[in-house]
Length: 241
Image (cartoon, rainbow, N blue to C red; front, top):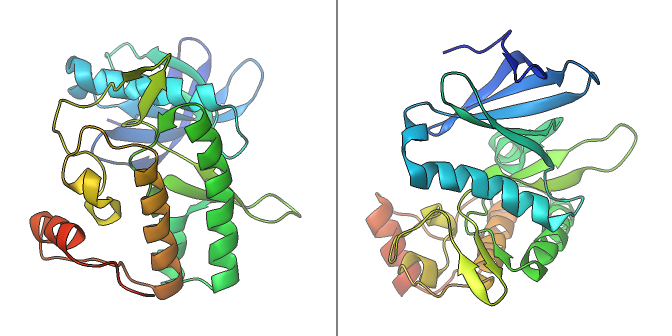
């Protein structure tokens, strides 16, 4: 359904559709009182009946808000539309994901690739110091913002399957024991194996895969299907770029 023109909670007027995915859709919106541009991410109404999916959605807001780093997307609000769709209100980003950049150029000059990855690692360090493991780092979740008159900046997105460790415990709003979550091409071997005790190092591995892809124009491991891909990650040495 097209939500253009809707006003959520008397505050957020939907302006236009930005993109759709398997979980829902993202719209540009504007706060009607303070005239602030923002983005609204909706969860599909049918998925809103699944408590674990809704928990993942809320987890994204909690995790991103807890970090407080300029390299992490800001989430302003959480709510539910009249038709039962949960939504997040986020800062509006002008630019393109690293995935979008690679679609245009296939690979990047080494210096630019390193600059983008170092920025992402700085934000990731703040994430890990907060006890949060992202678990789904990939070019789609690194967004390159181009401020006027300034160098590009990277923002980390989508903490929906992150794991949060607080007070010595662990809160994981998205998984059942043994479940494999993430994007296969960027998984560390322990993540591919479904290990329940993976930690921040899986994020560092994913960043290594992203850097490899940015400078070579290809992924380190491929397969005809996810099973072949995961088997390669588990059994083959990481190739030299």
